[in-house]
Amino acid sequence: CIMGEEQGASMTHYSSADLVAMIAQKQNISHEQAMKKLYASKLYATLAKEETKVWQYSTQMLYSLFEQEEQTGSIQFPDV
Image 1 (cartoon, helix red, strand yellow):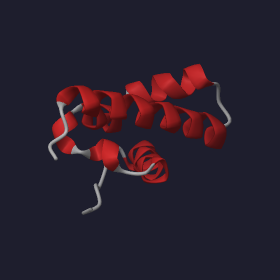
Image 2 (cartoon, rainbow, N blue to C red):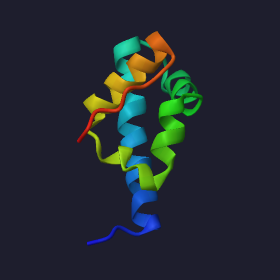
Image 3 (cartoon, helix red, strand yellow):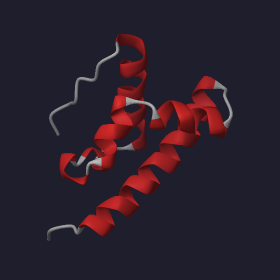
């Protein structure tokens, strides 16, 4: 089953909503601050590209990648 662009886009929306909530909680910042941080990240740019399939990762995995980018400035994507 090939997923359409629209379905991928809605998955990205759900992934990022969960991820924003996790960033806000773990970093003890507001949802708005978490959203700004996420949207400014390389991870979000990758997440927004449906063909990368990064949105398939769990929220926990995405948060780990987000944290890694914040600490090192780069992301090592795991082989899934």
